[in-house]
Each structure stands twice: as structure tokens, then as C-alpha cells.
Amino acid sequence: MSEVSYDKDIKLISFVLPKGRARPLQQALVKAHGIQCGNFHYGRGVGRESRISERGIGEQQEREIFEVVVAAEKSDEIFEFIFIQAGMDEPHGGMIYMASIPRSTVMTLPEIPAESD
Image 1 (cartoon, helix red, strand yellow):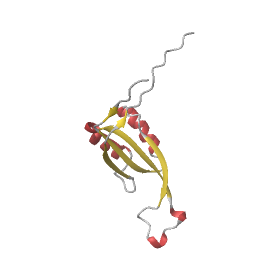
Image 2: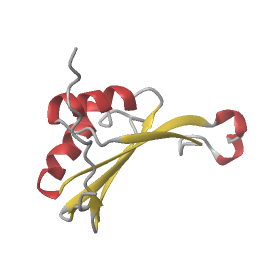
Image 3: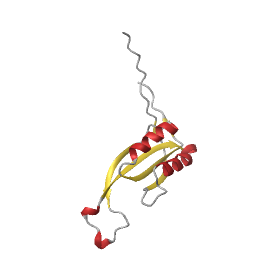
Image 4: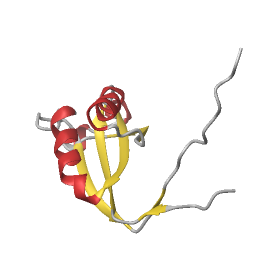
């Protein structure tokens, strides 16, 4: 069994997007920056645009929550890329935040020999 290695100078970028924007963003991160460690899941909620008297279960909207771990030295560049690529510069485009994390486990797939015919 191999030794576990850790990244220590890293940031977690988390963002909440309108439904349907996470998958294209994930593909753009892979293509433009080679980042394949992003994960996303779904949530529901009520935005700030609705008045309290009008909020109800029918007004909840599905959102996509995306998280990606990046090296600290590239974090500002990746943050800006995500902000623009995901359309967060538009009204109701989502929200994004970044935090330092103490460490992250480096996950790599094992080398698998090619099969011979």
C-alpha cells in the first residue's frame, strides 16, 4: 500500500449556481485548467428577491452547489475564471466564496497495464 500524501497550501472555492450551469462549468475547468476534482450536488431555496409575504413552497428554486479544491497560488485565477464562465457577473448569476483549508488528500488512480491481445 502506498503512502498517503497531502496538499497543504490549498483553497476551497464553493459556489451556488442556477440549475443547469454546473456541468458546463465542470467541463470548462477540465478543458481550460485541467482541474478534474470538482464536485457538485443540488439544493433548494428561496432567493432574496421574493418578499416575505410572498414566499411559499412553490417559489423554491433548485440550485447547483459546486466545490473545487485548487492550489493557493492559482486560486485567484481560478476564482475569476469561474465567476466569468458561470455568468456570475449577471443578475441572479449565483454566489461564490473561497476559503483556506488546512490540507487535502491527493487522490490518484493506480497505473493499470494495457491489455494485450
